[in-house]
Every structure is written in structure tokens, then in C-alpha cells.
Image (cartoon, rainbow, N blue to C red; front, side):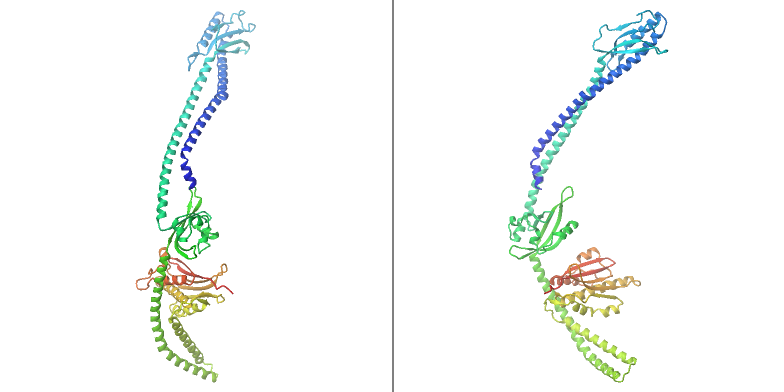
Length: 574
């Protein structure tokens, strides 16, 4: 940008340089044309004119040779004179000047049958000036004997006229070239003047734009291709607690809690994607506090399309986040109160209504098992008793889990074996999936490190994911009928590359389109039918995931299914 501004400021000097270049170019072209004329064209014209003169004289000499060879006394002399007169009267059409001014014959009378020197005619100017004399041998048309020599004095003015004509054309061509250069120079001068005006307008517009941007309550940072800060507006520096000189030249990642941003592979990813839109980042202020910003960045390309830098715009959302957290806290309290109310009453009622009959059934079943054991009876009834006891224990476990889910959440984060709340949440769904003919496949690695989390919050996340997955596959099953196998896959494993634990819930249900995928984490947004969803489930899950320091990634394809993936960092050993 500075080089462009400097170029526009020096537009007048460029105009002078362009003018000088055109003057030098015109002089060079004129010099080249003159040199071409003197050293190439003019000698070639003279050579061609001489050859033309020789050829024409040779043709005319053959006419004279024919008349000399004709042996008819005075009649031959008259025909010879007449032929020579015709040659002397021949004029070049372009100049209307005689080509030959004088002809003189020298014959060999040992061959020519005529009195000695009787045919040695000499016609034309007695003293021809500005001529070139060309001797031409005369051969007999019949015997090819040498009859003598004819001396033709050819007019040099004809050659001069030819040179003059070519010189005139060359001069016109030179004038046209000069005229063309002048036209091009005037055009470039006009364009340069317009460019100067545009540069002035651009400078004014840029100044207005900079002042407008500076007055906005938004952070604006311009980075070099390597991520170093090249420009920063006063508002950005003020937010961070620095002055501009303390920031310029330093790498942007020095001021980010997400310090890997715009470094290494992260920078390569940004360049590949060409933009970073509406990403929440946390800037570290000079005093160590954090400023939350909704951050967007885009590549800056030069006119040739080369990567020239990165422009970043940020909006301070610290106050907005604090308000959102307050709302989320209130929302969590309301949801928790409703959950406690519903599940508390449910758990109390179930415990009151079922525990007593289950206790009696268990006593009876234990008595029967003792009876069959004492009598070593292996009848089918003995096996049925064990089944009864197993089902009583299963019912007791469900009641215990519901009581656990209904207990108040302390919010405490502690090292946790994540498989425990996962299996607790799954216990609510295994039988439901089985009765609805839905496939629930569990791929859970039990040999995993501990993570720092809240068991009840993670259990709530799993329940929400499984509820959504069950709805997705059930809805698709209703629409497609036979041939479709509704499947939900639960995975828990550790990524070998970065050692993070990954929890996945994948279904082959109805899926989401691009718009639904973009908005699925927004509060109160739902794609379910009216009355079948509040639009708060995934929003609450997103809040819980962020609260526990995890990362949530959602992928979906309409008509093919969805996958919800949570990344969890293990507790540091030692």
C-alpha cells in the first residue's frame, strides 16, 4: 500500500520520464531508418537499377543485332537507324525521361558484310551528361557470331527518380511512425492525468475510510502473511491496554489465549480456507485479564492474486458473554428445577410403589432358589427363578439410577472415569431401543485415562444425544418402512495422535440440511414437529460442553444421518 501511494505521489515525474522515453524512441527509430537507407536500401537500389539498365540495354541490343545481320544494302542502314531512333525515343513511364541518351556502334567488319566503318553509327547527344555507359556485345541471331559492340549511354536521372520515389515512401513511413508515437504519447499522458486524479480520489477515500473505521467501536488488525501485526487501530490497542508501538511487529498469537492461531499448521489451514468467520477468541490484555471477541479474518490478495496479508475485524463481546452466562445460569437453574420436580416425583412414586412388591418378589424367589438348591433340583423352574431374580435386580438398578439422576447437581468438576456416567445413561435406553426394534451398538473402550468433568452433566449430555438419535432413526423408520435398519452407534475411545478422549453418537437417521446444521446449537431452534421439541436440548449440551472445557463437533447429511463428537482432554498424570 505504501509503494502504491508513493507511485501516485510521483505521477508528475513519471509523466516526464514517459515523455523522455518517447523522444528517445522517436530518435532511435529515425536513426534506424536513416541507417537502413544509407547502408542497405540505397546501395541495393543502385545495384538493382544497374542490373535493370543492363538487362534493358541487352534487350535493345538484340534488335540492333537483328538489323545488322540483315544483308540488304541501304535498306539495312535505314532499318538500323530507325531501330536506334526508337531506342533513343524510349522513355521511362514514371518520369517521362529518355532511358538511353546516346548509342554508338563498333562492328567487326570481318564478320559483318558491309564496307569498312559504314555501319559504325553514333546517334544521340554528342556529349551526354549524367549518364552511365553500358557496352553490350552484338551477336548474330543465326550464327551466334560476335558482330561488334554497342555502347549505350543510359540516363542516371531514371535511377535517381527511382531512389527519390523510395526515399519519399520511406519518409512518409517515418512520419507515420512519429505520428503514431505522438498519438500513443498523448494517450498515455491522458491516462496518466486520469490516474493522478483517481489516485487523489483514492487517497481521499482511503483517508475517509480509515477515519470511519477508527471511529467504529470494533477492533481492526492487519497482519503480514506470517501473522505479524502490521497495522492496528487505536481502539484495538486501547482494549488490550497497550499503545500502538508496543504491538506493531509482534505476532498476533502473543495476545491470544488460543496461542496456536496463525502459527504453523493453523496458519496453513487458514490460508487454505481463505477466511475465518465469527469465531470467538480470547485476547490476553496487558494486565493479564481476558477480552472476549467475536473475530473474523480474511486473506488480502494483490492484483496478481498473491497472498499479501490478513485483515482481521473483532467485536468486543465480553459484556455480552457475561450476560449470556447469567442467562445460562438462570436457564440451567430452571431446567434443573423442572427436572428435579418431575424426576423427583417420579423416582419417589416408583420407589414407593415398586420397592415393596419387588422386595416381596425377591424374597419369594430367593426362597424358591434355596429350595431347588437343597433338593438339587435342576428342573426348568429352577432356571426361571434365576431369571426372576435377575429381572428384579435390573428393576432395582433402574430405580436407583433414576434416584441418582434426580439428585441435585453440585456442579463440582473432578477426575472421573467417564464410562460410569455413560453406562448409567445407557441404562435408560437399552430396553427402549430393543422394544422399538432399534439397533444400539456400543463400542466403548474401558481402558481409558480419567478426565476432569461433572458426572451428572455428562450423563445429561449422553441422554440428550441418545434422545435425538432415537427420534432421528424412528422418524426415518416411519417414512421408509422395511429394508431400513435404524442404527445408533455409541463410541468411546482415545485418539492416538493428540491423546484426547473422543465420545461419539452416530445415527443413520433423517439427518440435517446445511441450514439446520448451522443453527442446531442455537437456543430455541428445532427441526422437530410442533410439540415434539423445545429447541433447548443441544443448546444446553453446547453450554455444558464448554463449561467442562470440552469441544463439540457436529456433522450431518440430510437423509443419511448425523454424528455428534465430543473431545475431552485427559487428566495430566502425576
